[in-house]
Amino acid sequence: MSKKYVSLVPDKYMDGWDNVYKKQMEGKLDELPQQYVHYALQEYYLFTQGKDHEGKKALEFGTGDGRYACFLAQLGFEVDAVDILPSAIEITEKRAEALGVTDKMNILLTDMDTFELQPESYDVISAIQCLQYLYEGALPKLLELIEAVKPGGFLLYGGNVKPHFKTDPPLRFITTTELKTALKGWELYSIAKEVRLVRPKDRRGYIWTVSNC
Ligand SMILES: C[S@@+](CC[C@H](N)C(=O)[O-])C[C@H]1O[C@@H](n2cnc3c(N)ncnc32)[C@H](O)[C@@H]1O
Image 1 (cartoon, rainbow, N blue to C red):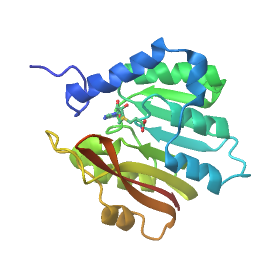
Image 2: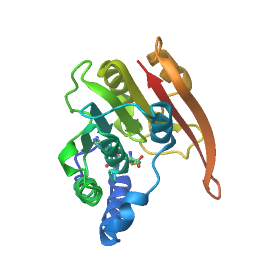
Image 3: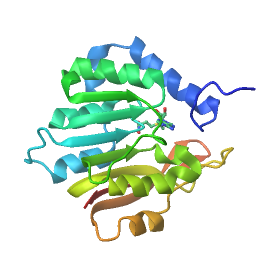
Image 4: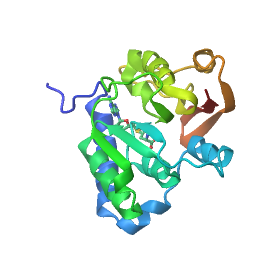
């Protein structure tokens, strides 16, 4: 059977995200801005409070419903937001409009696997809960992202670690050791892990970092 999406991710996951984003489109747009942002973005905000981000460049990978991309735009960044799902792009556009940051956003329907990254081209790169969906490409892409951060810039990363339920094909989790090795020489403003009981019998490990080049 042919795949519905271009992504490496099984259609059942893509359908799941697609439904979430489409559901948000049906909800009240004026409720979108209040939604939670990931710890890494909250911590980045606290660490850099008082800094002027106006006109600086950010990349938000696997942007999903766009809340992190819009958050960065609200801080003043010019943001490239990338996702492979049309519904993610659509909800990100709506959110940007609701928050009045459309002119700061470059919202791109594209594959993060083939997205061209130039060395030292972004002040902030954020990749939250997305690189593992590149499977064997996850770690090489993390290394490319690290190269693409300007000296003095930040990487905001979030991903899964074990425990996690089995998937077919298996997700490629970037381990704590791999993450720390990849960020050798960087200042790790924060690096943290937690295990959450997402639902009964479904314990999942999460790792995130805010790191400064
Ligand atoms: C678990 S969601 C995370 C979304 C968001 N980063 C967050 O943390 O809320 C994973 C996202 O990665 C996107 N994605 C998966 N494979 C992708 C690819 N190859 N290129 C771009 N986006 C991709 C999916 O469409 C989905 O929006």
